[in-house]
Image 1 (spheres, helix red, strand yellow):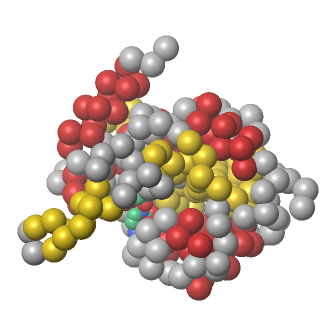
Image 2 (cartoon, rainbow, N blue to C red):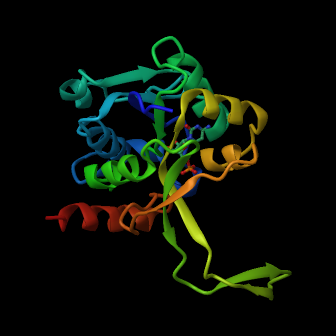
Length: 229
Ligand code: C5P
């Protein structure tokens, strides 16, 4: 299967309830710009990525158009977000269908992973190569992991083969659309593809590609961005 074009799809239709802020977390200020601007600018800076689609909630009134004029050549806004992340991604894939070929690669990335670098994306693309399934960025689990039951430790889970999934997660358009249609309640794309009986590649990234979820994560992300060479 020859590799074809690369597109990015960024679901950004969530409310970010765990952040406890007045506006969705993707619009909170981070290093002087709206949080979402960082990942979108990085994805637009990847030469191999042809277009970057961002999926907003249909009634989103926070999207700061003026912040994105310099990215207009690559960035496209889709106002078709759904009730869940998986639904937002599936709706985005549907909206891209006329432009993107069935075998083109789609890199799905959380708007909340603001510290993504061009190097992370290029490593993913290079390592997945022409793989028949696709792959995701991830990091090996560093801590000892416990399974809980009623506030007590029920088991210690061997961590040797455990990884934490990150994004981007990279699959071919048709495979991903098919997978999400069959498994609409997954929390990442890889889970939907795994449910088809397929085994996506794990591509080692690092913990700087964190997902901003809780208020303190904003400080961590700010520090990472400020201290990068
Ligand atoms: O809430 P969480 O951080 O897990 O969301 C991951 C990503 O999915 C975020 O970029 C968020 O905006 C997006 N999302 C979405 N549609 C939803 C819920 C979340 O696009 N209904």
